[in-house]
Image (cartoon, rainbow, N blue to C red; front, side):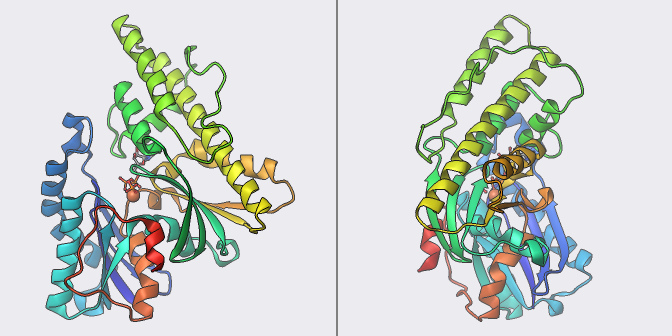
Length: 358
Ligand code: ATP
Ligand code: FE
């Protein structure tokens, strides 16, 4: 079964072709970093205009790369939500129009479910996570710890009480006045922390105070405001050197990582205490493409759960950030069960992942 999937829930316009035999035939992602750089964040109207401009070309390129015409496509999938309402409308309408005109079945997909299930497509069979597994979703709009018991059953163990972790990466990157790399502000902050130079001492986070101690919920306001306060002062003093930026970038990475490590360990202990045997932790969403974080979370779980054989599973970095491959894969089960959506299906800017089960 071959699916053409479309995604436009935030600022990337994506189209991809994937088969039920786990073959990624194409993966087109058109970034909008240049459109949004002058605004210092995603500008909703600019995003919609760019999606309108870029979607037809993305679809054409996805078919060309897959060396297929529409007659080789068996079903059309799209991101139904959650996301920015008018951005979602672009992929929803494009998918419905294609499906209706060509008489193909249609499936609308939950964006966060798609982030979570990507590893079921990309991991070799011996490493594929088995249910129940823990899912840590770290992205631009979400920070979620989920107990995942099937492709559609997700129980929320924790969320961020304030802002999403990816959003804080974006804000700190901008406050450091880093150039928007082609990969966006979060990746620019990672690149800065990796610069091969001695960092200046930065008076940040002398010891990492536990965030929401004993609780699973995340909070990033504290880290964010501490960086913000320091940078205001340093900029007033005209002392924002490159060495200082590297120091801040590294301290910020450390603070974020320590919090994610703590919550993940706590969640695994709680599962064990409640008799839930979790052998895999899936980490996905844009922030999971961060190399420092990937290594640290993996060695943290290895050292804290020695002998318990808990594995961390990540999608490859290029499939952690938004893409339509994950949308195609998350739709596959429903296509194979012939559980299609109606052409009149509405897109949803808010959609709780727990509601997938019903
Ligand atoms: P959501 O999935 O919650 O709807 P989204 O789709 O906008 O949000 P994703 O594409 O999944 O978000 O992830 C984008 C986020 O990932 C951005 O906040 C970005 O800064 C962050 N990000 C991307 N690459 C990196 C990186 N290398 N290090 C840290 N953060 C990163
Ligand atoms: Fe996303």
